[in-house]
Length: 265
Image 1 (tube, rainbow, N blue to C red):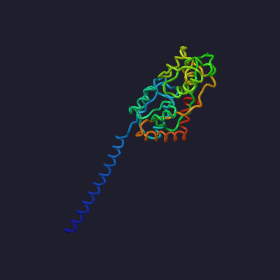
Image 2: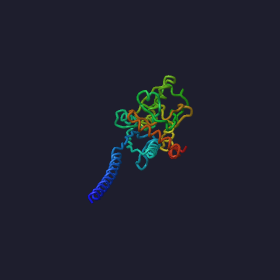
Image 3: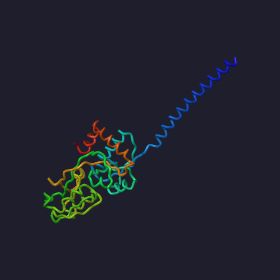
Image 4: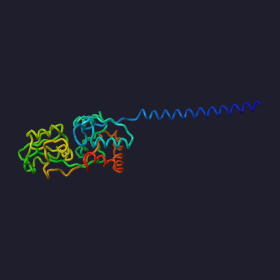
């Protein structure tokens, strides 16, 4: 009888231990899952404010554009959270450089000068040229017509670089501005003979915003791709997710849908 009672007690203890182990394992799994959710990073992404059709505010006061939609599609594809902060070009760049934001998407041209100064770019997501732009009705038709005149540019952009590269050859001066609308207005007001802007942005503004400017033929650059950028190697995970997501949305057609929505090509 003692042996029987002892055996039954051992069985009961073993069952109790198994149940206990099962509960502990389940609790641990739930705890791990909760911890993973709690530690999930929300990436801070800085962008420009007025760079239509890549980022701008629509009639419903919503922040929209090619960059905005591409980022949203990539985040959904890769399963990460982010907060998009619309700061303006100079402030957006400064925020990423200072570590106040993790990445930048703002129609930023991939160029060696930026890479040399610490920008770490994604794969290119849109190829764009830069073009000289003049007031509506202007007689300017070639670079030679710029001699002795002033050209407006936006600080730190590929357009500014393009203007600088031709300045000595064609004999014009340059004035720098912090945003595109002020630069456009300088030309409209007659203070500058021309400005330099990314071609798709300028074409969109003329078509949809009624900006009193025009694009002369044959005054554009060869072009270069836009890229998403980080400036801290510790954020490589974000860059890797952007590249992977970009490849996926190009493969599944989502990328083409976004471009067609804003540009129609």
